[in-house]
Length: 453
Image (cartoon, rainbow, N blue to C red; front, side, top):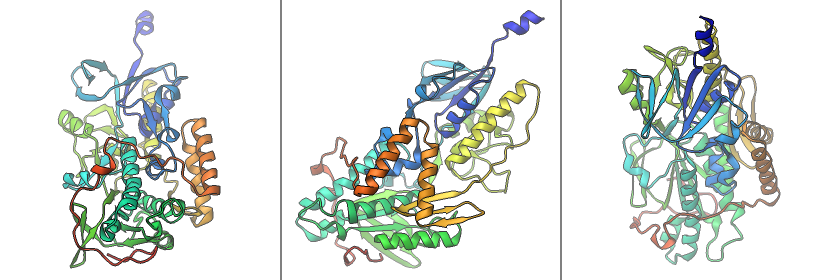
């Protein structure tokens, strides 16, 4: 009997996805008596909260990325596989990875989410979202190409279309993008061009609800809006986008329908579950919400399949207050650590209370020396909120060299107001960009302060 126990193979834990949820699960299992296999279609972990700074030329992709193998190199019970899981075989407990199958005793799916266009997927061509490194590089290309194209444009109205930036969505990503582009146009680039005045740039932030940053306290939302207006951003709330096509954004505000001519439209309005959500639903019969997220049990497992867990942005956990937890990094981190602890408790024949998320607050950067922070027991805005935002983001970067590089970059940018990662990369040349017709509708321009649309 003793020999049988000694020869029993270790418990196999397979983690699909190397984002915050998957990575924190693997790290928490580093010393557990299990064998861990982490599978991701990328060989790196991406610190998504700073992705907008890649899109606006403040940081380079490598500054906020960490090779998964390097991060987990000291976890001797963990191996990393590069690949994309396409299916799950529940009968034999294997995930399908290309031509091979990986066996699991416990499966953790943490494949995250991507941006949603609410059924208008054709808008993606005109308004890229921001979830991956490729998205950030494409945004960066479009933003800096717009200024370059405006420099060459001789027709006034077409030049103004190049200098009009429309950001759809007033959550943290949209707010941070708007503030960063404003600082770029009105400070960083103001001496770099000869034929255009970058202070004539118009930046429009559109939000469908009655205020930006809806999860924040109303006074912080108002503070963020005031700070954006001081930077030169026009904030339009209760404004719905009804169409994006041929360099024209059609919006509806109340009963009024208007058009905005813009060559650069950026999407920050919604998310939907990764394709793995559909695979899990088909194989297990689990219920999904409208965004395709898996509705999980109180212990983050799938109903009827206690050895399959879904965490992070792919999970709809509504057992705490009746509402799904937000798709933010701290949620995924805590869920990953919880599942790791639960696995170890189960191996010892023990149980664990249901998962409970500890909300430690929300943060959003507006611009240099300006941010909003809601910690529940205290609310900050302005310089101290900005400083707190910097410290928290540096703290949660995965590797020490990333922390050091980002701090140096931020310090240098603060002193010089310069951005060193302003590279235009990609296969599309400037001569191919923006060949669509421009509608003759333009709103009057004002210096620095854009007009309402």
